Length: 436
Image (cartoon, rainbow, N blue to C red; front, side, top):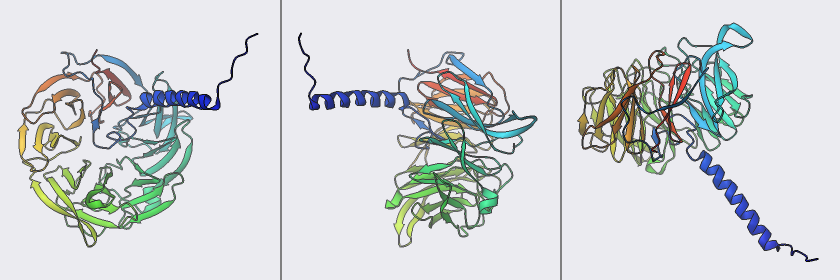
């Protein structure tokens, strides 16, 4: 009988290495295009995916599938670990006569609901926050200021806070908390809007307070309290900092201890400060509507840490984004201009010079997303449009009407793994935008 030789220890280790590498790269390829939070991995409204349609047929790209059961709300979706997460107001299973606000998870492969966990009380037309996924935990902020941490696997609550009860928080006006929480390292960042706890950093595992940031008086424009924007990270002037637009304007606090760094009051209005700032190196672009305007700020080091110097200011007649946000692509800002309008605009990031401004494709405000050299404009009246991302000229590449009318078409679009996701009230639609 011929005996087989056992593999050497070296060979065994090599086999294990290649097997584990194959598993790792397979997993990485499955989740490489995850969209784990509001406006994507970098909170900039940009997808790195390629191989997408550069034009649409007359009726738009084909609908791949749809699911219902999301409830009422304007929350967008996040996608991670093979699951879809969102929020919605819907009836309680144990009390069908009464609604509540829920965070909801669906299985991406089967489209089946996995769990729905109560966040807080309902809010008229529903929540606005998009859940933030971090490993095995997922976080959301309810419209009444309920901040919850839940397990990704089963929706079991890990911890919760309430902005009003725990921090004395307040909103600048009456549409409820709309922020999507930020995870940065071991910290969760959010904006209760209190004078001595305007922005807070919490331990993401326990909810324990790491620091609370007090904000001084930065000007008379606007109102005290949180705005409707979400925090972004900047490392301008060599200082890691959190930039946010709140009731009194755009502000920044130090990541290590919450120390106030700078504030810019000129873009504040007293109705609603909404769009998320755009960060690029040592610069921050901020914009709000209601006859306010836009500004580019140069963030430079000073004796107190960092200061913001105005590079330019655009009047509301030049450019103001209501809600729907803007994106920065190859040195140019793209977005919808005007209060309750989505007039397509391209402007030079560094100078503010308008490259082009065209008539709106739809009506109402427009949410904008970028992927594969194109802009995706979603209008309030359910018109979805594809526009080439070039400063040379405005080039419309296709449009269609979203077939589900569930009130204002405000939830931000998402692109993940070749699908364009559009939430419309209780329904989530997924369109195949991959090239064949």
